[in-house]
Length: 347
Image (cartoon, rainbow, N blue to C red):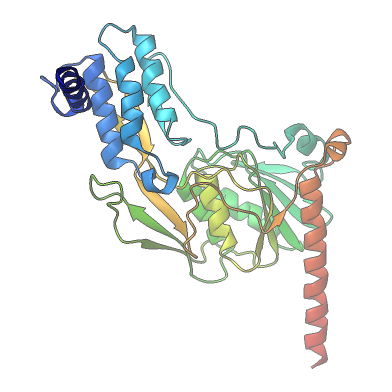
Protein backbone atom coordinates (compact mmCIF):
# COMPACT_ATOMS: atom_id res chain seq x y z
CA UNK A 1 0.00 0.00 0.00
CA UNK A 2 2.78 2.45 0.89
CA UNK A 3 4.54 1.73 -2.42
CA UNK A 4 1.30 2.42 -4.35
CA UNK A 5 0.79 5.70 -2.48
CA UNK A 6 4.30 6.89 -3.37
CA UNK A 7 3.79 6.05 -7.08
CA UNK A 8 0.43 7.85 -7.09
CA UNK A 9 1.92 10.92 -5.41
CA UNK A 10 4.72 11.09 -7.98
CA UNK A 11 2.23 10.84 -10.87
CA UNK A 12 0.02 13.59 -9.42
CA UNK A 13 2.97 15.88 -8.73
CA UNK A 14 4.47 15.31 -12.17
CA UNK A 15 1.22 15.74 -14.13
CA UNK A 16 0.45 19.01 -12.33
CA UNK A 17 3.95 20.47 -12.54
CA UNK A 18 3.05 22.73 -15.47
CA UNK A 19 0.46 24.48 -13.31
CA UNK A 20 2.68 24.98 -10.24
CA UNK A 21 5.95 26.42 -11.55
CA UNK A 22 7.87 28.17 -8.75
CA UNK A 23 8.71 31.21 -10.88
CA UNK A 24 6.99 31.08 -14.27
CA UNK A 25 8.82 34.23 -15.44
CA UNK A 26 12.29 32.70 -15.13
CA UNK A 27 13.80 32.01 -18.55
CA UNK A 28 14.71 28.34 -18.46
CA UNK A 29 13.90 25.30 -20.54
CA UNK A 30 11.18 23.95 -18.26
CA UNK A 31 9.29 27.22 -18.08
CA UNK A 32 9.55 27.80 -21.82
CA UNK A 33 8.26 24.30 -22.53
CA UNK A 34 5.31 24.68 -20.17
CA UNK A 35 4.52 28.12 -21.56
CA UNK A 36 4.52 26.85 -25.14
CA UNK A 37 2.33 23.90 -24.25
CA UNK A 38 -0.18 26.13 -22.44
CA UNK A 39 -0.33 28.80 -25.17
CA UNK A 40 -1.02 26.15 -27.81
CA UNK A 41 -3.53 24.44 -25.51
CA UNK A 42 -5.57 27.63 -25.11
CA UNK A 43 -5.26 29.18 -28.56
CA UNK A 44 -4.73 26.51 -31.26
CA UNK A 45 -7.73 25.91 -33.54
CA UNK A 46 -7.79 22.29 -34.62
CA UNK A 47 -7.57 19.98 -31.59
CA UNK A 48 -11.11 18.67 -31.98
CA UNK A 49 -11.08 18.64 -35.78
CA UNK A 50 -7.86 16.58 -35.84
CA UNK A 51 -8.75 14.50 -32.77
CA UNK A 52 -5.51 15.42 -30.97
CA UNK A 53 -5.06 14.68 -27.26
CA UNK A 54 -2.77 17.53 -26.23
CA UNK A 55 -2.53 16.35 -22.61
CA UNK A 56 -1.12 13.00 -23.68
CA UNK A 57 1.41 14.76 -25.91
CA UNK A 58 2.52 16.79 -22.87
CA UNK A 59 3.05 13.57 -20.96
CA UNK A 60 5.23 12.21 -23.77
CA UNK A 61 7.45 15.27 -24.26
CA UNK A 62 7.65 16.86 -20.79
CA UNK A 63 9.84 14.05 -19.35
CA UNK A 64 12.40 14.83 -22.08
CA UNK A 65 12.93 18.38 -20.78
CA UNK A 66 15.32 19.54 -18.11
CA UNK A 67 17.29 22.74 -17.70
CA UNK A 68 20.58 20.99 -18.48
CA UNK A 69 19.71 20.25 -22.11
CA UNK A 70 21.76 22.01 -24.78
CA UNK A 71 19.89 24.71 -26.69
CA UNK A 72 19.77 22.49 -29.78
CA UNK A 73 18.47 19.51 -27.80
CA UNK A 74 15.78 21.66 -26.24
CA UNK A 75 14.76 23.09 -29.62
CA UNK A 76 14.43 19.57 -31.03
CA UNK A 77 12.11 18.52 -28.19
CA UNK A 78 9.92 21.60 -28.65
CA UNK A 79 9.80 21.14 -32.42
CA UNK A 80 8.93 17.47 -31.99
CA UNK A 81 6.00 18.34 -29.77
CA UNK A 82 4.69 20.94 -32.25
CA UNK A 83 5.02 18.52 -35.15
CA UNK A 84 2.49 16.28 -33.40
CA UNK A 85 -0.11 18.84 -34.53
CA UNK A 86 0.48 17.79 -38.16
CA UNK A 87 0.09 21.38 -39.31
CA UNK A 88 2.10 23.30 -41.91
CA UNK A 89 1.10 26.54 -40.20
CA UNK A 90 2.78 25.54 -36.92
CA UNK A 91 6.42 26.63 -36.62
CA UNK A 92 9.04 27.37 -34.00
CA UNK A 93 11.63 30.05 -34.80
CA UNK A 94 14.93 30.57 -33.01
CA UNK A 95 18.04 32.53 -33.97
CA UNK A 96 19.62 29.35 -35.35
CA UNK A 97 16.79 27.20 -36.75
CA UNK A 98 13.10 26.93 -37.41
CA UNK A 99 10.78 23.95 -37.41
CA UNK A 100 8.23 23.05 -40.07
CA UNK A 101 5.87 20.18 -40.79
CA UNK A 102 5.38 19.18 -44.43
CA UNK A 103 2.88 16.36 -44.03
CA UNK A 104 0.44 18.33 -46.19
CA UNK A 105 2.42 17.43 -49.32
CA UNK A 106 4.98 14.75 -48.42
CA UNK A 107 4.07 11.35 -49.81
CA UNK A 108 1.77 12.78 -52.47
CA UNK A 109 2.30 13.02 -56.20
CA UNK A 110 4.04 16.19 -57.38
CA UNK A 111 1.73 16.73 -60.37
CA UNK A 112 3.94 19.61 -61.46
CA UNK A 113 7.04 20.11 -63.60
CA UNK A 114 8.13 23.75 -63.85
CA UNK A 115 10.75 23.04 -66.51
CA UNK A 116 8.11 21.56 -68.82
CA UNK A 117 5.86 24.57 -68.25
CA UNK A 118 8.62 27.03 -69.12
CA UNK A 119 9.72 25.03 -72.16
CA UNK A 120 6.33 24.17 -73.62
CA UNK A 121 3.55 26.37 -72.24
CA UNK A 122 5.02 29.79 -71.37
CA UNK A 123 6.05 30.36 -74.96
CA UNK A 124 3.35 31.93 -77.19
CA UNK A 125 2.78 35.68 -76.63
CA UNK A 126 4.55 35.34 -73.30
CA UNK A 127 4.82 38.30 -70.95
CA UNK A 128 5.07 38.91 -67.21
CA UNK A 129 3.25 41.43 -65.06
CA UNK A 130 4.17 41.50 -61.38
CA UNK A 131 3.94 37.89 -60.13
CA UNK A 132 1.92 36.76 -63.16
CA UNK A 133 3.56 34.74 -65.94
CA UNK A 134 1.21 34.87 -68.91
CA UNK A 135 0.98 32.97 -72.18
CA UNK A 136 -1.58 31.91 -74.78
CA UNK A 137 -2.35 28.32 -75.80
CA UNK A 138 -4.90 27.56 -78.53
CA UNK A 139 -6.90 30.76 -77.88
CA UNK A 140 -6.83 30.07 -74.13
CA UNK A 141 -5.00 32.30 -71.68
CA UNK A 142 -2.53 30.59 -69.37
CA UNK A 143 -1.46 32.38 -66.17
CA UNK A 144 1.04 30.86 -63.75
CA UNK A 145 1.23 32.40 -60.25
CA UNK A 146 4.19 30.97 -58.30
CA UNK A 147 3.46 32.80 -55.03
CA UNK A 148 1.05 35.07 -53.18
CA UNK A 149 3.83 36.17 -50.82
CA UNK A 150 4.23 39.71 -52.15
CA UNK A 151 1.87 42.60 -52.75
CA UNK A 152 1.29 43.42 -56.39
CA UNK A 153 0.00 46.40 -58.29
CA UNK A 154 -3.63 46.07 -59.28
CA UNK A 155 -2.65 47.59 -62.60
CA UNK A 156 -0.64 44.39 -63.25
CA UNK A 157 -3.77 42.31 -62.76
CA UNK A 158 -5.81 44.69 -64.90
CA UNK A 159 -3.28 44.34 -67.72
CA UNK A 160 -3.49 40.52 -67.53
CA UNK A 161 -7.30 40.53 -67.74
CA UNK A 162 -7.22 43.11 -70.55
CA UNK A 163 -4.65 41.11 -72.51
CA UNK A 164 -6.64 37.86 -72.26
CA UNK A 165 -10.13 39.33 -72.43
CA UNK A 166 -10.89 38.27 -76.01
CA UNK A 167 -9.88 34.64 -75.53
CA UNK A 168 -12.32 31.78 -75.00
CA UNK A 169 -11.10 30.93 -71.51
CA UNK A 170 -8.33 31.35 -68.93
CA UNK A 171 -6.29 28.79 -67.00
CA UNK A 172 -4.96 29.94 -63.62
CA UNK A 173 -2.17 27.64 -62.50
CA UNK A 174 -1.47 27.82 -58.75
CA UNK A 175 0.23 24.46 -58.37
CA UNK A 176 3.25 24.58 -56.05
CA UNK A 177 2.11 27.98 -54.78
CA UNK A 178 2.50 27.59 -51.02
CA UNK A 179 0.60 30.76 -50.18
CA UNK A 180 1.32 34.18 -48.78
CA UNK A 181 -1.25 36.98 -48.55
CA UNK A 182 -4.96 36.12 -48.61
CA UNK A 183 -5.65 39.63 -49.88
CA UNK A 184 -3.76 38.87 -53.10
CA UNK A 185 -5.99 35.93 -53.95
CA UNK A 186 -9.14 37.89 -53.08
CA UNK A 187 -8.15 40.74 -55.40
CA UNK A 188 -7.63 38.27 -58.24
CA UNK A 189 -10.94 36.53 -57.53
CA UNK A 190 -12.77 39.87 -57.75
CA UNK A 191 -11.86 40.09 -61.46
CA UNK A 192 -13.84 36.90 -62.06
CA UNK A 193 -16.84 37.54 -59.82
CA UNK A 194 -20.18 37.44 -61.62
CA UNK A 195 -21.90 38.88 -58.55
CA UNK A 196 -21.38 39.28 -54.82
CA UNK A 197 -21.13 35.73 -53.52
CA UNK A 198 -20.65 34.09 -50.14
CA UNK A 199 -17.28 32.31 -50.37
CA UNK A 200 -16.51 31.19 -46.81
CA UNK A 201 -16.98 31.49 -43.06
CA UNK A 202 -14.29 32.31 -40.49
CA UNK A 203 -14.41 31.06 -36.89
CA UNK A 204 -12.18 32.88 -34.39
CA UNK A 205 -10.77 31.33 -31.22
CA UNK A 206 -12.41 33.21 -28.33
CA UNK A 207 -11.46 31.32 -25.18
CA UNK A 208 -9.11 28.75 -23.61
CA UNK A 209 -11.34 25.73 -24.30
CA UNK A 210 -10.54 23.69 -27.37
CA UNK A 211 -14.01 24.41 -28.77
CA UNK A 212 -14.29 28.06 -27.75
CA UNK A 213 -14.98 29.79 -31.09
CA UNK A 214 -16.96 32.73 -32.33
CA UNK A 215 -20.03 32.19 -34.47
CA UNK A 216 -19.09 31.65 -38.13
CA UNK A 217 -18.44 35.04 -39.73
CA UNK A 218 -19.43 35.17 -43.43
CA UNK A 219 -16.96 36.34 -46.09
CA UNK A 220 -18.07 37.68 -49.46
CA UNK A 221 -16.31 38.49 -52.73
CA UNK A 222 -17.90 40.73 -55.34
CA UNK A 223 -16.94 42.24 -58.70
CA UNK A 224 -13.79 44.31 -58.56
CA UNK A 225 -11.48 46.01 -61.05
CA UNK A 226 -11.75 47.76 -64.38
CA UNK A 227 -12.83 44.68 -66.33
CA UNK A 228 -14.10 41.25 -65.33
CA UNK A 229 -13.70 37.94 -67.15
CA UNK A 230 -16.91 35.89 -67.02
CA UNK A 231 -16.15 33.28 -69.66
CA UNK A 232 -14.98 29.79 -68.57
CA UNK A 233 -12.04 29.72 -66.16
CA UNK A 234 -10.05 26.76 -64.89
CA UNK A 235 -7.91 26.75 -61.73
CA UNK A 236 -5.15 24.12 -61.57
CA UNK A 237 -4.21 22.80 -58.12
CA UNK A 238 -1.99 20.20 -56.51
CA UNK A 239 -0.96 19.16 -53.00
CA UNK A 240 1.50 22.06 -52.76
CA UNK A 241 -1.29 24.61 -53.23
CA UNK A 242 -1.37 25.65 -49.58
CA UNK A 243 -2.55 28.33 -47.15
CA UNK A 244 -3.53 31.52 -49.03
CA UNK A 245 -3.56 29.45 -52.23
CA UNK A 246 -5.96 27.01 -50.60
CA UNK A 247 -8.20 30.02 -49.88
CA UNK A 248 -7.83 31.26 -53.46
CA UNK A 249 -9.00 27.92 -54.87
CA UNK A 250 -11.99 27.98 -52.50
CA UNK A 251 -12.87 31.56 -53.45
CA UNK A 252 -12.64 30.98 -57.19
CA UNK A 253 -14.68 27.78 -56.94
CA UNK A 254 -17.60 29.84 -55.61
CA UNK A 255 -18.20 31.28 -59.10
CA UNK A 256 -20.28 29.14 -61.50
CA UNK A 257 -17.99 29.64 -64.51
CA UNK A 258 -14.88 28.42 -62.62
CA UNK A 259 -13.78 24.77 -62.54
CA UNK A 260 -10.93 23.30 -60.46
CA UNK A 261 -8.83 20.65 -62.21
CA UNK A 262 -5.84 18.65 -60.92
CA UNK A 263 -5.20 17.26 -57.47
CA UNK A 264 -6.50 18.08 -53.99
CA UNK A 265 -4.97 21.20 -52.47
CA UNK A 266 -2.64 20.90 -49.48
CA UNK A 267 -4.97 22.69 -47.06
CA UNK A 268 -4.00 25.16 -44.37
CA UNK A 269 -7.32 26.73 -43.39
CA UNK A 270 -6.30 28.71 -40.31
CA UNK A 271 -4.78 32.19 -40.03
CA UNK A 272 -1.38 31.99 -38.26
CA UNK A 273 -0.66 33.89 -35.06
CA UNK A 274 2.76 34.64 -33.53
CA UNK A 275 3.71 34.30 -29.86
CA UNK A 276 7.10 35.06 -28.28
CA UNK A 277 8.44 32.77 -25.54
CA UNK A 278 10.56 33.79 -22.54
CA UNK A 279 13.79 32.96 -24.41
CA UNK A 280 12.90 35.08 -27.43
CA UNK A 281 11.91 32.16 -29.67
CA UNK A 282 8.69 32.65 -31.59
CA UNK A 283 6.02 30.06 -32.18
CA UNK A 284 3.45 30.37 -34.96
CA UNK A 285 0.11 28.59 -35.08
CA UNK A 286 -3.44 29.12 -36.40
CA UNK A 287 -6.14 30.68 -34.21
CA UNK A 288 -8.98 30.54 -36.73
CA UNK A 289 -10.82 27.97 -38.82
CA UNK A 290 -12.15 28.47 -42.34
CA UNK A 291 -15.24 26.79 -43.71
CA UNK A 292 -16.24 26.91 -47.37
CA UNK A 293 -19.66 28.35 -48.18
CA UNK A 294 -21.18 24.85 -47.92
CA UNK A 295 -19.71 24.38 -44.42
CA UNK A 296 -16.79 22.17 -45.47
CA UNK A 297 -13.66 22.63 -43.30
CA UNK A 298 -10.78 23.34 -45.72
CA UNK A 299 -7.94 22.61 -43.26
CA UNK A 300 -7.00 19.35 -44.99
CA UNK A 301 -7.49 20.60 -48.53
CA UNK A 302 -10.10 21.05 -51.24
CA UNK A 303 -10.94 18.37 -53.78
CA UNK A 304 -10.89 19.39 -57.45
CA UNK A 305 -14.01 19.28 -59.61
CA UNK A 306 -12.08 17.11 -62.07
CA UNK A 307 -9.21 15.02 -60.69
CA UNK A 308 -6.27 14.60 -63.07
CA UNK A 309 -2.73 13.37 -62.42
CA UNK A 310 0.29 13.97 -64.64
CA UNK A 311 1.21 10.70 -66.29
CA UNK A 312 4.86 9.71 -66.19
CA UNK A 313 4.84 9.09 -69.94
CA UNK A 314 3.51 12.59 -70.66
CA UNK A 315 5.99 14.20 -68.29
CA UNK A 316 8.95 12.55 -70.02
CA UNK A 317 7.63 13.93 -73.32
CA UNK A 318 7.34 17.45 -71.89
CA UNK A 319 3.54 17.27 -71.73
CA UNK A 320 1.60 18.50 -68.70
CA UNK A 321 -1.41 16.16 -68.48
CA UNK A 322 -3.28 18.55 -66.20
CA UNK A 323 -2.87 21.57 -68.50
CA UNK A 324 -3.91 19.44 -71.47
CA UNK A 325 -7.04 18.30 -69.61
CA UNK A 326 -7.88 21.94 -68.89
CA UNK A 327 -7.46 22.85 -72.56
CA UNK A 328 -9.79 20.03 -73.63
CA UNK A 329 -12.33 21.06 -71.00
CA UNK A 330 -12.27 24.72 -72.05
CA UNK A 331 -12.61 23.78 -75.71
CA UNK A 332 -15.73 21.76 -74.95
CA UNK A 333 -17.14 24.52 -72.75
CA UNK A 334 -16.42 27.10 -75.44
CA UNK A 335 -18.15 24.96 -78.08
CA UNK A 336 -21.18 24.43 -75.82
CA UNK A 337 -21.42 28.17 -75.13
CA UNK A 338 -21.16 28.92 -78.85
CA UNK A 339 -23.94 26.43 -79.70
CA UNK A 340 -26.20 27.85 -77.00
CA UNK A 341 -25.59 31.36 -78.34
CA UNK A 342 -26.43 30.25 -81.91
CA UNK A 343 -29.67 28.61 -80.69
CA UNK A 344 -30.71 31.73 -78.84
CA UNK A 345 -30.25 33.76 -82.00
CA UNK A 346 -32.72 31.45 -83.79
CA UNK A 347 -35.44 32.65 -81.47
